[in-house]
Length: 266
Image 1 (tube, rainbow, N blue to C red):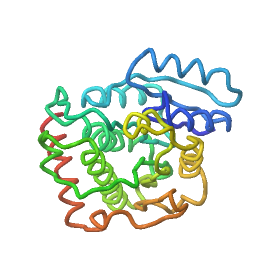
Image 2: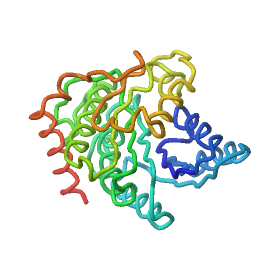
Image 3: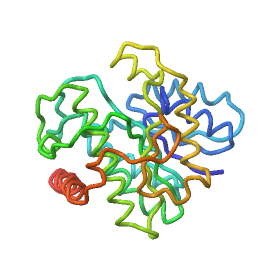
């Protein structure tokens, strides 16, 4: 039995992944933003035979809430096998967080970075971190991450997902064999999540396609040596991300921006 934290697992790909992992006999640490949705998802999962469920509530748009989530998980577990950074936002326009950040960059880029960094002692060198990237990737403006700008949702989302992919590579290279396997995964474009329905007005594809690749990334030997890589499930294989994610200078600048934000806000 593996202990697996999945952020944003009250619906969409996150919930579908939780179902698969519980059926396989693992312990899933369910996470959501609102207590009601977390309780509803927990009830839905509790009828499944197999693994175990714990639940955590945290609004990942708040740095303090990310820190509190780490504390809560650490109080319950001396070891975490897998972290799946699934939580994300798309269609919301420019909303500024209590920390003065663009919510889209905070939830999609900064929160998973902070959560991963803080949970490294629990993950150790044998753990895995699976970051939910996207086929939508656009050149990152570090200034937009540091200070809210009036970007349209599609641009902000694509920037935030490339930024996530960039820090995946940097952190994997920095930690090497001393840290967990850290991989960025595009679970497949236009799957039938609430985010896709709200953003594009389409029903979308089978969520289990995305859940399946996340389970493979979390557990299979196929991903044992995948640290720093990008898996594109639109084509079903490891591939090259946006060229900027392969540019050491741009990646270093992005990580420095995130680190500076966290140093000022924490």
